[in-house]
Length: 133
Ligand code: AMP
Ligand code: ZN
Image (cartoon, rainbow, N blue to C red; front, side, top):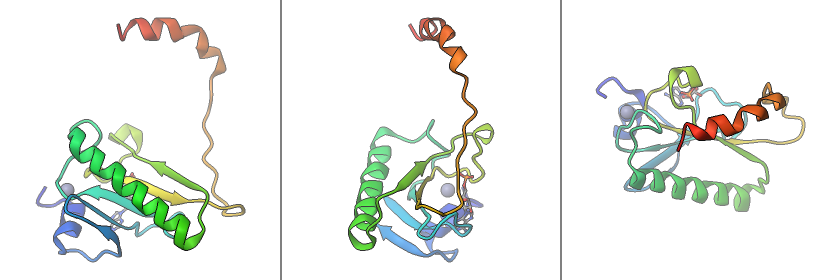
């Protein structure tokens, strides 16, 4: 935690461009933005990712994301936003202090998330569900 860059941002030890702050959460611009207003939302308390954050702090994050997206909608007229949380290195998490990316999108922004889909995997769905019971 001592060398966590997002903890340093919360403590004011590292410069950030703050969008919003309350007792539990902090939101700031991503320094490698995909689009204008690309924002990261984090809990002030250090958690690695989705697996160790408490339900309560997760709720705080959700509320903050709703506030920020409402603000971007009202003040900037945004109507297209992607929200992404990478949890785990194999899920492309690079900074291990949980964060949600709020990524405004618009026509002609030259960004395109493309998934490789496998419709044929539907035949395994029943087996997959069995493992959960
Ligand atoms: P992820 O790959 O989901 O872990 O994303 C980490 C994000 O943190 C990347 O988009 C980085 O550009 C961003 N980032 C890393 N360091 C900083 C920083 N000091 N201030 C703002 N954003 C940062
Ligand atoms: Zn941290």
